[in-house]
Image 1 (cartoon, rainbow, N blue to C red):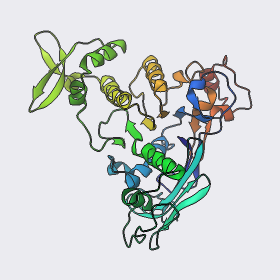
Image 2 (image 1 turned 90 degrees about the horizontal axis):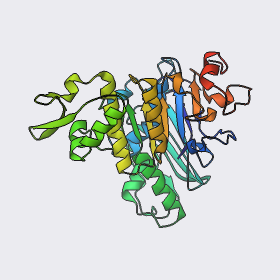
Image 3 (image 1 turned 135 degrees about the vertical axis):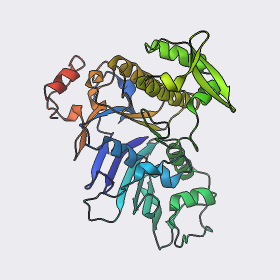
Image 4 (image 1 turned 45 degrees about the horizontal axis):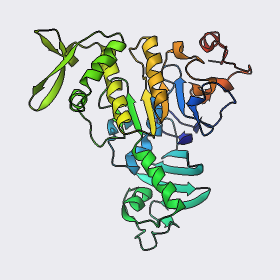
Length: 368
């Protein structure tokens, strides 16, 4: 799982920006949001333009050069910080797998060009590379591998993963688990179907997938439980199955008349079922997860996400769900232009389960 992340000179982040998920408190309530002494379920708040979306994109930059999963390059225009003097962006990830620390850092000039990278497992450097030099690695199984990437802009890690047969053992297990985690990371926005990164190789038609997976009846139940009263059916056109609202003798195209909130909820349902199906155990980042939701619906959606055996990061503006009934103070983060901290660390007061976090936030108790 992700423990800490650092980014510099990427989009909004001119100076080094650190997101630390390891700084937890000793709360005895809502322990379901903590895993291995690390924040496993979190919600990020911050004013418009502070960089919440950019943080998600920075976190998922790794997917673009280490995997072959879907990567929406259109989200990465204006890659480097416009005010920075450095000619590359720097990223550093701190993971923990089976209690073992894994640190991966790299620099890129743009979305495709990796210029240096280093991988450490259990405090020991196992791969190091700078463009124009040979790959340096002590991984067993890479002895005969050609370590000259020439003018290629490839990641040395991805090159080794695809071309070397590593010796079985502790290091290989952790190396493979690291790649498995990255290859299954998922970022998506609340409304746009194609604004996602990772997990799948290509976009899919949402309605077609829901129907083909046999989930139409369950989807109808989900909408009705979310206070959207409806009866669903489907029609097939040119080989694609399209969801419809069923009004007895009349069927109307779902996407043509569904409200913005219903469309957003449909996108969530699609991804939620996909993650359930695969027993998802990686990282999911949902940007503005509850855009167009009523706060009661937002609350129930978070409850569903907490049930997933995965690390979850959400962004929102809805402070109605800032409650100890849902999460705990070290899982709610407030982001400014220069830092991000949990509300547990933004007050000198010892927060307890009975405190009204929303009321405290409105009163300025957390400094923002």
